[in-house]
Length: 97
Image (cartoon, rainbow, N blue to C red; front, top):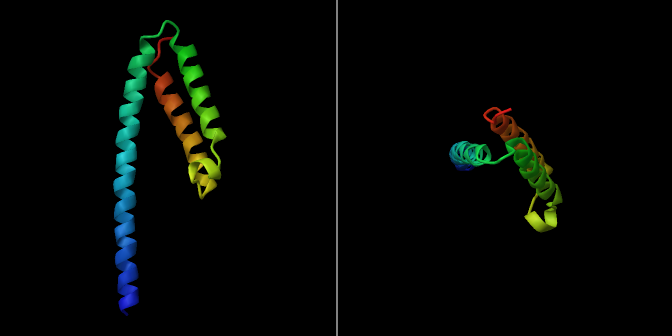
């Protein structure tokens, strides 16, 4: 019975840690998006600057491999690429046309 109790306690601790990390990621993403929006608005051609920045980021993420990133699960890279799509949508909503 103690193994079951220990396992349940460990699962709960992991759930709490995942929730805390998710909150940290959310706050980081919001701050990053706001900072990038502010910086891009100052560019002479904010759309081109955003495109270049996001293309460079996408290329960098795609260049990561398990040997260079310690990546154990391909979901990590896919989530990073999906996050870029989210950032792109958020960034472009405030850029002047």
